[in-house]
Length: 187
Image (tube, rainbow, N blue to C red):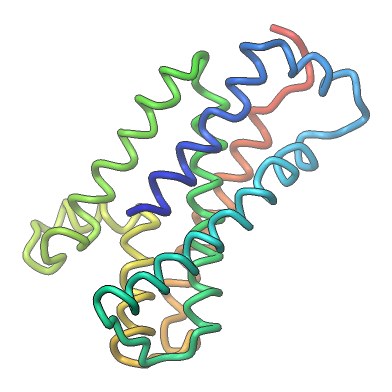
């Protein structure tokens, strides 16, 4: 939940803030293309997300003695995919929103369903089928399954490939839409 909140929030206001302040004009004048701009926007946040994962794992062990049954590298790889998916969603939001306030409101439309129907708060199997189908489109649903599989059951990433594939598809779709919506012109 912390990763979703911070990663989507950071990136959802990134381009909007630059557009509001006029910094986007400087980027338009450079030879940087849309894909390069989007990748440059998410790289620092990937590192911040991995630092957050480290702090969360450390505090989970220190305060609550949360065991990691699986491999730590699998936790980080799964987290990296989830962070990229969250950043992709944030970039998509930033291409739609015209103000930072709108970006934050749109971020809440992703965060609240993620908390409520991903299996984080309520058991996934106890939800109506239609809600389960909607939840399958949320990255947090797949990340929760990955983390539970790795940390609690000791499953490897090979055992959890459907969840990895779902996150990969989400990343590709969100980044493709965000790049397509990023224009190098003044409106």
